[in-house]
Image 1 (cartoon, one colour):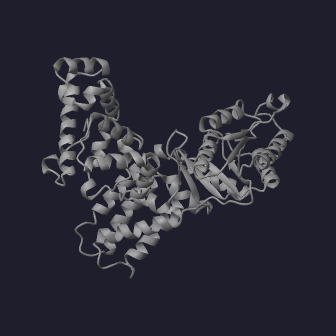
Image 2 (spheres, one colour):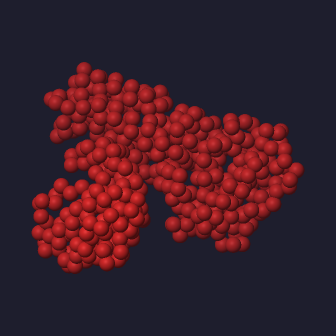
Image 3 (cartoon, one colour):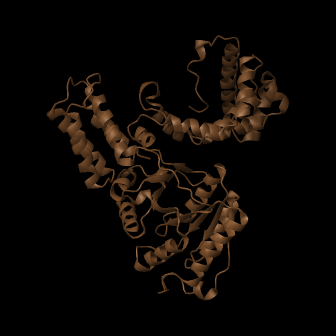
Length: 463
């Protein structure tokens, strides 16, 4: 996400490098490029105007730090202003007397049902007991979809029963604003949450292809009935300003408490994220960054700005590593290496598996700064085929236990057998063994307390 905006901002800042001071002329040129970059990223034009005015005022005023270079001064000012637009603090979910009710709102196709499941999964990891319910009695199989999602994440769901007369008419028919079925399902689900000890009730509501009076009346009735602590608007980030405008309309009618932006991993522009807080006045609380049910992240404004400006997001990377990587296995491996007890192909395979849990190499590198020693890593990562790690693991899996523990016994005939078993070539097997031998020597040096400089340039398989 934000790839296009990041590239354009870097070019705008580059033109300031080498300047001795900030003047109206050079800051004006940089701001013109910055304005164009933001507009091309589909940021709301009012937001762009406000941002540019604030940056110009601070860049040419007394707030500039003389210890910084002109380019760094502007980067700092832009960072501060972007953080202010997105909200300085991370907006957290509000919890009330159990069950806390979270009403999910949004247009059809925004990812509302999947997001409801993702939110339930996120809450479970935090020690909560969520209960899911769908009150969408119009869209065919909508309630069945949520049931499938709930089963996939192991979350509780209240199914209830819906009269056939309501579901048969479909979403395009002129139905009452709040059918008896919707009202009954919502009331019964809340009672079920109380009886079963669930502390959060997530209500997946019906969506429409566009905003209409029926949708709003139904949502207002649900709000009055359930008195939710949270009303979250789910918006597809890839629709840009349409998502912002829809959120604004919903907020005027429902008083939203927050926004969830889905498909952020596919949005290279980022205009919706940079506009929605300013336009609606409501914070972005979560972003969807993938199709898997754990691909929902709390929205941290300062970290997102770091990504936009190429400063990276190391904190999120560390949190992801802590969540995904087996801490005990990592500690055992570190102790083994430092003790000089060797590094087998089984160890090599286990480390590859740990790395794969973090996602693609490209997604990992995107969380790192794009400057200094990390400069150029993104280009390498983009050209890296993540299937290479799968091939490497397949090669190791095709070895016997003895071969994985004693790689020196792998002669020519064994290499041919391993290549056939893994669907690779003998050359690829040879390459893996060479790389493994390098790592083995490197870890042996680490165990002795001396890291051999010859291995400083070691690269991951396939890179």
